[in-house]
Structures are given as structure tokens and as C-alpha cells.
Image (cartoon, rainbow, N blue to C red):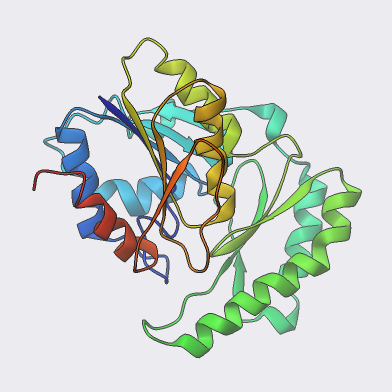
Length: 261
């Protein structure tokens, strides 16, 4: 039995944050083969429920799916997000969120980034996605995210929080929150299972923490699948495999080697 941990943004979505139906179908094949499946994402549970879960085949029993949203602040099993739990210790103050929101509304960010109202624990802006293939708009949004991150750093640090930049967004989160929190929870939940291999899929260097957590928890045969742009992160005792394509296209390329379809 293998254990899979998937980031979502940039792994099961394309460069414009659109969920990739064919990538999801390959994830379903992994589930059908009886492996342990989990998502560890910075996305909100509402986003997952509205955008990813509707693509799932309802004939598959998803009750054993492990889900971590907002990096680890929200955890649960299955696709009924009302049963998932929000850990209050990771929720940043409302006045901090308000200050971050005010910066996001500055004119220079119009049509480039927008506030994510679905987040429960953190303050997040996301890129405003353009038409597929519009590389100029894509580059402009990425610059806007970097500029926003610079502008809010004093708010983030001054409130005792930290800033996390991902492929599509910028999160201000509790200083102790990372995907390590979510990965640890899942690994504890499956501690009684006989796991032979661990496969982690990510598109940003921060996703490597999931594989590192598996290593620290004494799991063996860990492979990090890199589907991001640029050079893949590397860690001792963790094999790294890179796709030739990025984002969900890379995930499909690598997952096809895991399934029987």
C-alpha cells in the first residue's frame, strides 16, 4: 500500500488555477487501487467543495480521503466539509485581516489580485486569472503578488505572523502553521497502516515539508514529485522526480506511471 499527499494549487490545477478534470481522474485511479490518499493545501475548504470535489466520481467511496485545508488549520476526512475541524489556535486576528485587505484594495492591484473571502484562519490574496495563454497577464499577476507581499510584510511581522507566497497567492498565517501541521496529523491518523511507499506531489519548495515530515515520522521509500517551474528542491533520504511539464500537466505525466489505466 502506498501513501499519497497532494498539494492542490498548481498540482491538480493548471497555470490559471482551473482544476484539471483529467488529473482528478488519475487521482481517482489511485483511490481505486486501494492506496491512502490525502490533500494538503493552502486553499479553503469552501474552495475545495465548490471547485474540486464536484469533479469526483460519486461511485467511489471518498470517506477515507484525508483533507487538510489552509495549510493545516482545517482538517477532516471525506468530502463533507461541514464535518472538518478548524483549529482556533491558528486563526489570525480580525484587525490584522482588515489591514491586509486594505492593502489589497490599493489601485495598483486592480484586476491583478483579489482578496479571498473564503479563508477562515488567514489573510489571503489570490491572482486574478486571465485568459488561457495570456502570458503577459500571468507575469503581471505574479509581480503584483510579490509587490503585495513586500507591502504587507510589516503588518505580517508586526502582528507576529508570517507571509507565505505560493504559485497563485500570498497568505499571512500564524507563525506555527505550515503543511507540516497537516502532514503530521494525517501520518498520525494512518499510523496503524502498512505503508510501503510515500509519494508527495508539489509545485512549490514549501511542499517539500510534507515529504520531510514523512521522513521525520520514520516512513520509508519517500519520493517527492516536482511539477513546479524551475529547479526542484532536494532533501537527504528523499528521492526527487521532476516532470517535463509544469502544474497539472506534469502531475498527469507522473501519475500515469502510478496507475493501471
